[in-house]
Image (cartoon, rainbow, N blue to C red; front, side, top):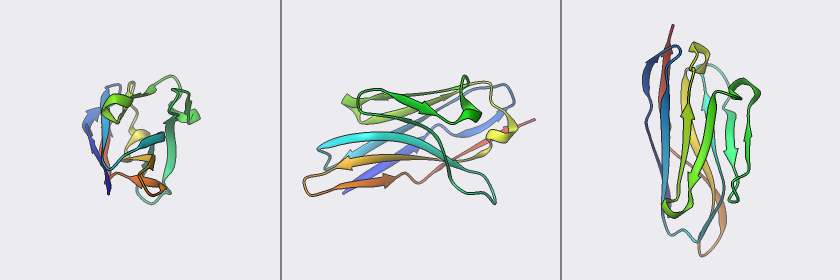
Length: 119
């Protein structure tokens, strides 16, 4: 079994910064793409950013230039550095990873961490 555990959410004023972390653990052979999604109240979950195993990244237009995704493959951990936060960034943030175990390649999700940006 594989678990993704997020940390780093919280309350911050507009213009501030937060850093989210997501650590994967369990019977992991390899982790492919890792990403961050967010879901605001009453809205669908949307992609914020993802990073491939080789380090290539992609961002939603709304966060380009403000957020940076990175990963530490040795620690099976993905990070999201969020700068210049805006009230519209308020959401529950979820990490996602494509994980190969000894039996199958499967998508896993974290439990979510709340980010609240006050104006």
